[in-house]
Image (cartoon, rainbow over all chains, first blue to last red; front, side):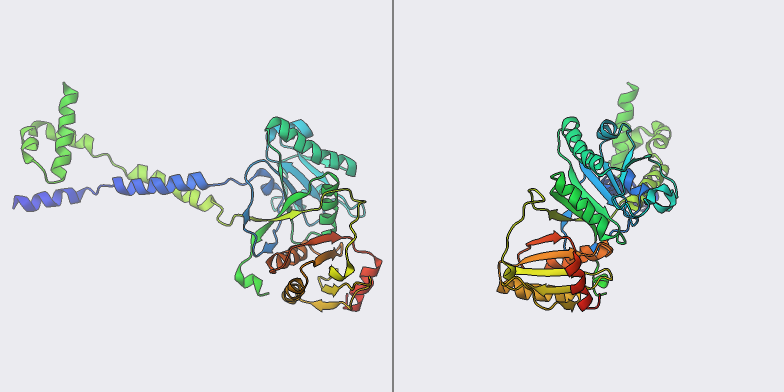
Length: 195
Length: 185
């Protein structure tokens, strides 16, 4: 009979160690792979267009993001706080430029920019095309001196944005010799493709 | 001295749990009750917290990482123009409504009658022409009021087509509007 008793004893307290080990592994995996959304993405919401076969991933560091929202505003941002401080004079500032003089900029009403209707970051408006061009160059120069790396340029356009704004931006980029850039898109699913 | 004994007991306890030597366990029976309490650490709150953290990170992790479409604009001054043989040129015009007008240039400088195509048809035409003429150059003209979504779709179709991806962006001018009117705006 003592044999039976002995067998029961270990079963009473379940050894959780392997279970915890596995969970810790999964936890570590998610902590390491987690990517926190950039501040900018929260403040200015855009609906990304879908595309099918872009296999390149969005670069993570040293990125200059140019966001075009559906009002035709262009927002320029870099992911380095020192560069922003250096160029805009404000560590959380966000540069904005409205290329089309015939329409009103959308950023005057914060509810145009995101659902919350408030901007956490102050907008530094550029009304002059030449100044905006200088800004793009300054961002890159400042990044080179502060971080030691050149910026990669990504363009995040809203689905509903007019191509005019994108064309204006492309012209500005060409004039500032920023000829390599990428459009950010969402991966298209097969159902959407058939539309 | 005390530590030594404790260590011994821990080892014994592990062995006992595995069904090992009972001898040691019995010999140090007087220690048994006190130590056993200390040895079984209740892991439940620990696991609870870890599970919470795990849930948090699973929820916040972004699974669909945005993709990027690489674009290389030609370097050089805006004024500098490149002469190309019109016979190699294909015009892709996108109207305000999002219609696609596709037309082929002729070597004498004129161009063929534009055809209205869907995105899918455009790719098929481009693949056909692109394989027949390896020197094909696509000139994209977008109406300023057309939607950015359309631009990405067109670029995407071009990227998807099994042809040389040689294209350039060009401004839409008066004659282009007339061409687009011919296919229904």
